Amino acid sequence: MNKLLSYIFKGILTLLPIIILIWLIKIVYNSISSIVGYIFSLSSQSLIATIIVCFLVLVFFFLLGFIVERNKEAILLKITELIIGKIPVIASIYSTLKEAINLFSGKNTENYLGVVYITLNNYKIMGFVTKEASDFYWVFVPTTPNPTSGFLLQVKKDEVEKSDLSVADGFKKLVSLGIK
Image (cartoon, rainbow, N blue to C red):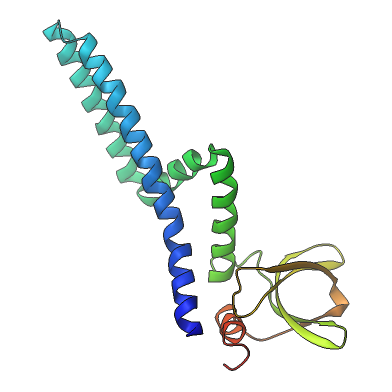
């Protein structure tokens, strides 16, 4: 049952940026459609103006296609992130989700320092080091069996016991309540 819930949660997290992207594409499409409709309504009286507008639109799409073909995924991702970054509330949620997904999926290995154990009131608690500062670590301690919530601790380096668990193994242990 816990594995099922874990997969459902991961599926939702995976689709959230895509849903936001589709929503933004719909907004952009509606905006472009209304602008092009307005331009064509102004130039509908003149055949030359309509041909010029059609030519400029085709040149624009050609240049956009050329840029995308040369840079493929990077340009689309950057454009999408630029658009999402301009929306006040969505931008902060998207960037937080993206960092968390990258951190726990192993894509952001330069900032991720590993699974650790810290001692609180003679109990060892598993956490994930998210940042290293001069003399302490920032450790995210998720709740179990739902690791989407938790708390962030600032722990001195000498009070942290590093583990050899991978991120996946750490989450398995967390979600399975320590059984696996």
